[in-house]
Image (tube, rainbow, N blue to C red; front, side, top):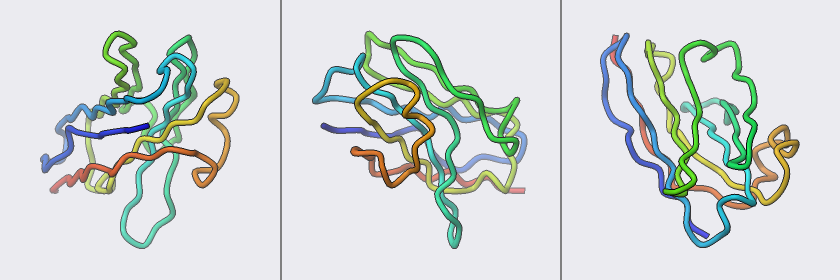
Length: 125
């Protein structure tokens, strides 16, 4: 199982980025894929979660209305579209995978079986 994030970088406040999480080594349609982020000195924050067979979770207030999760089953890839970025969005962004139903999206981060290496997002003011 492999998850590879990409798309991070340095962007000015108000800008946009689209992160990708390319999955391989498992049946994509049988797993939930979640996005998390972690800034230095903080706990890992859950952003959203999706199941390719249908359904996605809501977003925390910190990103609601600005971030959108989506899935391309043909490419076994989950995206996180991030708009109106703010300096407080600066963090390492991770995707994680877990076999099962979308109801598992509510589980804590440490219960996800598979993780990518993370991609850095830095938003300058």
